[in-house]
Length: 150
Image (cartoon, rainbow, N blue to C red):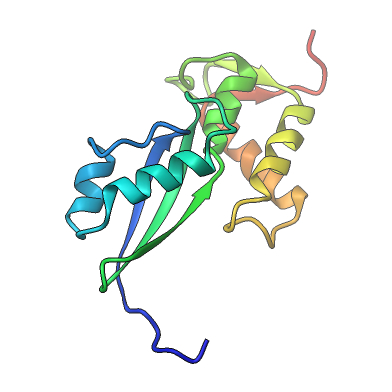
């Protein structure tokens, strides 16, 4: 493309439930202040995430350009979301390191790592490195990784 590069005016991070983008908060104010087309974003985001359950929080990185156009990348949900689902928890442990809130198996960690590997941030990382990061997240949440569930 030999044209002029578009100038970036802002990078906006949002967490929006799959298929649930609406021009209301948090999407409206975040994108509206950069004069982006809210309906175009909502329609495109909902189309891209329609195959995912509607209660799944998706991380979105919106790149706003000075000409009021935008691009966005949808990332998989956070590792903590997957860990809580795998351990059957509503929230992480309030006293991590002292009290076990729940347990997951190495298979859970590996499955989460495979999903996270598709994220732009993780695409050049090995599954082992992603798995170690997820195990660290689990530990900080008070979720224990057990090799055998008793």
